Length: 107
Image 1 (cartoon, rainbow, N blue to C red):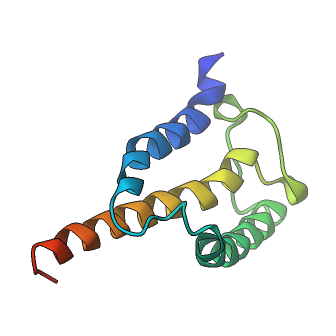
Image 2: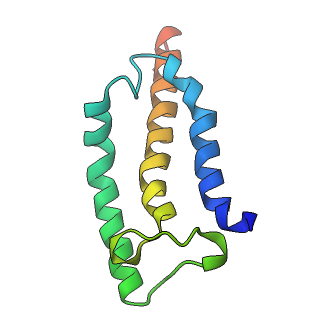
Image 3: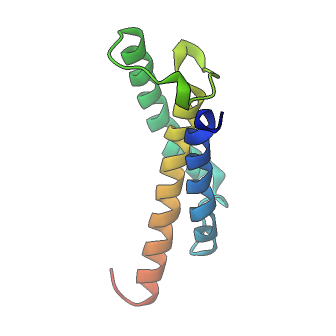
């Protein structure tokens, strides 16, 4: 039963681990428009790519490791969230690192 939640659990942990990084610099979550403009176009492109690959039978997802909830075109909800969560975590990390390095006079 818990296998079906692994993907979502990992995504949640990624967000939880990087959430404190919001305290550094100007913040990622504090600028939602900028965050959306950074993440959503790329996520849409990769989601379209996934949908085409699924429809063509190029790849799929093991039902044992996903909840079974699917977005349009058969893309698992976990994959949709992956294309949002991981870039957000990357932006949080990048923002924190550049802020810390900027404080030390290094860049």
